[in-house]
Image 1 (cartoon, rainbow over the protein chains, first blue to last red):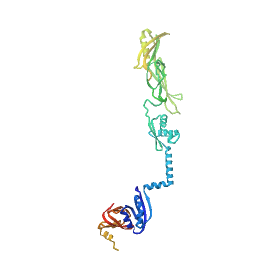
Image 2 (image 1 turned 60 degrees about the vertical axis):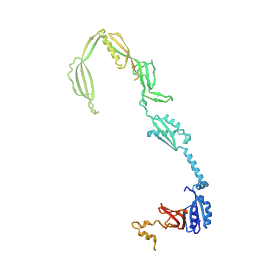
Image 3 (image 1 turned 90 degrees about the horizontal axis):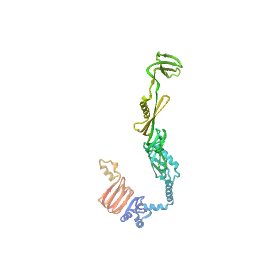
Image 4 (image 1 turned 120 degrees about the vertical axis):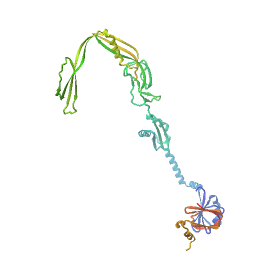
Length: 373
Length: 87
């Protein structure tokens, strides 16, 4: 097939003699006898120039002489204008259509994410022509518009745009829905160590409980805002106060521990059942509890319990000077209720005020503590 | 009618008679080669003649090979027959 050969069709009698003579100098291929006096065979193209004369010299008539092979195929091809036009048309069509994008494939993310990105790219493609599409711009566009994409690569593969996504794995400190860091105490800020977030205070500021100390976001150099969990070590001087009031003369009422219970079953305010013990207490106070006995709305039974506690009253005369240290200590304890064990006490002081038969002790403890949570 | 090849085939034992009908080649003293059942001559040369048979190809090598007779399915080759190979 790859050799150039000439196919010869001869007509005449005593062809064997002619073929034998020919075969002494030339190799003959694919000899076939079509009829008694007609044969067909092939010779190498190089020998075809002389063969016609040789055959005619042997008394045979050369009916046809046709060359074939790769060289003749190419020669014949270029003689066929329609075929050339067809090939050129197909080539032009192929080159033109190859310049267009027919499909967008997105790989690497979840199906819903891929669909989102695919639709986004479809909406943002100005043209389907490859020359008018910048893969770099597409990469930036996708990265900027989808938070779940950490990196992206866009490439042309044939007539497709293939987008490879690398989903971003947000660290624990990043995410959404974080609340700002607020001050838990009133105080003056003495030291700030910001870990993450955007600071809203500075050293020396006096903040109140509830004031925002750190906002839950950071802004990068390009101006993009990322939500983060606000973290900071903010130390402040906090004033903890406690107050204790002492009366030199007072009447103390207390429960002795004895009690009696009265039970009643009510139906719409009507007492159905009642068990009332004898109340022999000289002084008492009572507490009343009521609860539904059933969930049947037609018959709303209620149980009403009244508990009578025996109380006694005592008259106490206690000069302030006798219990001063104890009262101050109580005021201090009240102030220190709000402190943590890690707090450093910087200063503590108290003030005394008197009037109307009572003494008021105001105790203030100044501590250094972390107010940023 | 007497047929030389059929007589020989009848003498063969253990071979299906119907399988021996593809081609026949007789080499007469290395000087004459008679072939029945060829399906076209592929190469003719003074020292080599090749032809197709059913399910194969036969190459005859020799010297001064001459095609004495050629029909659509028989051929007679004359010359010094050195080797007959079937592929």
